Structures are given as structure tokens and as C-alpha cells.
Image (cartoon, rainbow, N blue to C red):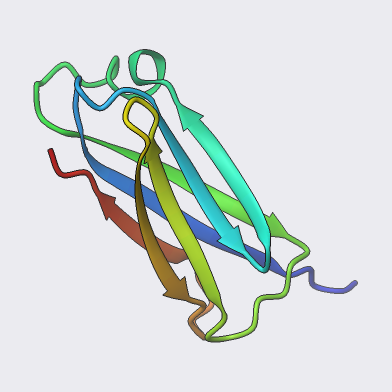
Length: 107
């Protein structure tokens, strides 16, 4: 049995609040993009009524994809209400673990 390659990126978006609105996370590697919509009232704000900024986390999985060490990937968060795009470009590390990206919303 052959081992299949899976590339994973864990994206956290920090600093969300009631003013943030919906957020779309995007991860692009080797020309392929995966995305997820976080609806503010249904996904992340309803679970946090503390008044403190909220964090969302999304694991983007690319099965059957070989990504060379030091190859670049890009992780972004798009604030839908004002089209603000926050991105981070990373490189695939030699470590046998998912890549981790922390994005921060500044109000």
C-alpha cells in the first residue's frame, strides 16, 4: 500500500468581533485554492457572548498533493463587509506536521 501525500494548513483568524461580519478564509498552494465561509451570526459569534475578540480556525486539506519543501503557499482572510484582505505567505517546512498561519484583524 502506498502512502498518499496530504498537505494541510491550519489558519487561525484572531480579533473578530460583532463588527467584523462574515469572513472567508482562503488557502492557495500549487495553484489550487480552498476556501470556507464563516457566517458571523451562525459560526463564530454565537458561541462567544463574552464581548472579547473571537478566534476562528480552519484546517485546509489538500489530499494527494505533493508540496516540495520551501514551496510557497498563501493563506488569507477576507472580511466580506469591506473587502479587506489579510494574507500571509509561508513556505512548506520539512517538518512532518501541518503548516500553521495566524492572521490578525485590527480594528
